[in-house]
Image (tube, rainbow, N blue to C red; front, side):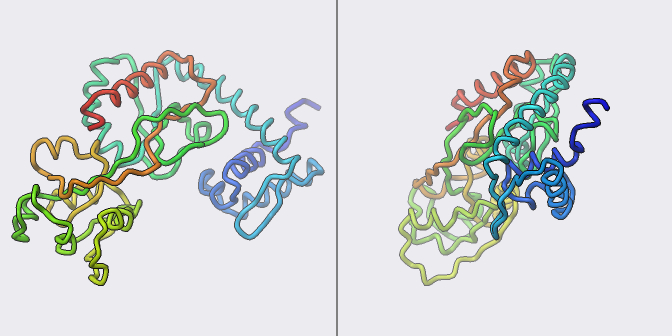
Length: 304
C-alpha cells in the first residue's frame, strides 16, 4: 500500500482545514463552494478515520479540540508546502494574482494600472475583485488587499497600508438644488435635508453620533447599496450624500465633481492591509507588486 492510499481523502482534509480557520461550517462551505452538510459529513468521516474528535459543536459554530488544533496546524503546514511547490512554477512565469474588493479595484487600482504596466511590463497581473474573502491556496491568490482588522489568518504577513478615515461627500449640484449655502458654511443642522447613501459598512449612525446631531426625531431618507463604489456613483449623480474613504474620491474632489460636505471626519480602528503568505515572500514578481503597492500608499495622492 502506497503512502497516498493511507491518507484521508483530499476533500475531507480541505473541508477540515477551511472549517478550522473559519470555526464555522457554513463559511467553510461557502469558501469551498459546497453545501454545509458536505462539510459536516467530511469532518465526521475524518474524525471516524482518525479515531479522535476534532471539533466541539455549539449553537454558534464550532471550536477545535486540543487534538483538532494540533491536526489543523499540521494540515495547514502540509497545504502550505504544496502551495509553495505549485507557486514556484507560477511565479517563474511572472504571474501574480491580487485579490481586492470591487470598490478598491474600481476606485483605486484601475486608475493606476497604466502606471503599474509601465513600471513592470514583465508581470502578468491578474485581479480577483470580490466581496468574498479569498483564500490564498484554494483561489491561487498571491497577494490580497484586505479591509478590517488583523489577524487575518495564520501563516500570513500583514502590513497596514492605510488607516480608516471617512468623510461625507456630495455633488455640488445637489447642494445647489437644495438651496443650501456653499460647502464652507454648511451646518450640521442641514444633514436631514440630504438622502443618506449607505454601503455595506453602515457607518452613518457612527458619523451622526460624531456630529452630535441632536434632531434625532427626524427620519432620515436612506438608500442602501451593497458596495461602496455604487454609493459613490450615486453621490456623483446627485442622489444623496455618502461616506467614503478619501482615497476612493481623490480625483472627484480635486476636479470638483464631489465636495466634502462637513469638516468632521470619522476615524475608525479598521483599515486596508496588504496580506500575503509568509512562505512566498522571496518570489521576485510578488516582491515587485508588494513594493509597488507600498510605495503607492506612501505617496500623498493615495493618502490625503
